Length: 471
Image (cartoon, rainbow, N blue to C red; front, side, top):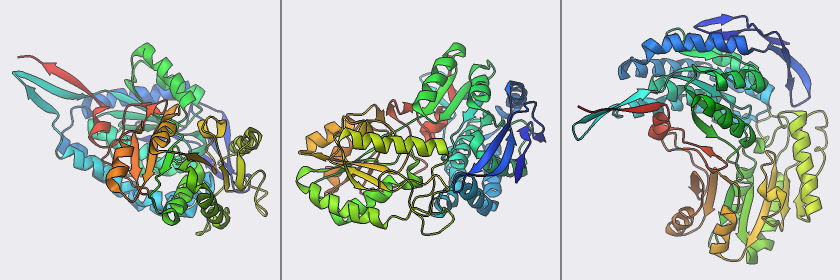
């Protein structure tokens, strides 16, 4: 059994003031694999004080110095790539397919910010005045369990590029992954106090970060409900906030799309990261006159989806992260049945032979009405809703009929038509004919999917304050 009994503050691994123990459970078999000692409010205050002191010097660092720090972090992260893969499979239950792909590009977060720094102008002249972009201050970084490493790395890279110091609160459920991250960041040998970790509960550590007057900004990735609480609390000290929240992403298959390509891509995409992904396209919008053909293809694909142990290379869907999450997904499957949706594949219960873990069948509902709860609420599990539409205009209307607006997808044989449709969807990112990613392109949500943007120049400027000096 593994034990995580240190936090990382001011360049050192220290025993936390907090004493509460949190058990770490392997979601594939629900066996205990470790314990983490949780930080408390005192630990947060000490970490914030260290970050505040470090900020005095680091905020004055040159672009060249920050590029050097980012380069060191990139090298340190890439050295431990296999360790990240192994521990993410064991602790989180991420599939070998997903975590290998995810960790393959860890260094790209640092590379992208280095690229931004090489051309970004921190000082500009407007008329006779000087406008300086100044680091916002100490940043509280709060990250989720479904993408712990990439969330931390991408936010830290941006903060370092801006000249900000950070206090990171990863999910307590990701403590073993966090242990590797702490070691990696320590090995990069940055000046003390720039990067600090305090693993603890959201209502303890997260709350203290949000109310602490010496924290200037919160960068949070997680649920919409928690994001709203952070925003409400942060306003008391007028903190800047970046909130990347939930999603219920539409995937519009236009009537000229090649269904034999688009539908399998859509089904596998809906199950990305075992469907524990805020950008997963879990609403599949298809032409009504092609619904039968779509159903046949989708059912065939679902029957070939492998739900299994995450370490197996052919597994497409691993376990849900916890018993609680498994039960949540099961409840939504029941709701779908009660609402009158047609069960096309999967359904309630665990796949045969996987009864010990938190495994959910690859589930598809069809004939779904967009007003149904399974079409409106984020399930965060392998449940896909197929929604028919009559016209292109109705497809766009359905796509936008959601409280969320994080991501969207459009498939069409006509690229210009796909772009035209994409331009009418209220979402922070829209992918055409498949799935793509660019760490220099802004990421974030419309409506209840969040506030602000991450990545690239847009992400960098969220960590900066413009200061005008009128001469």
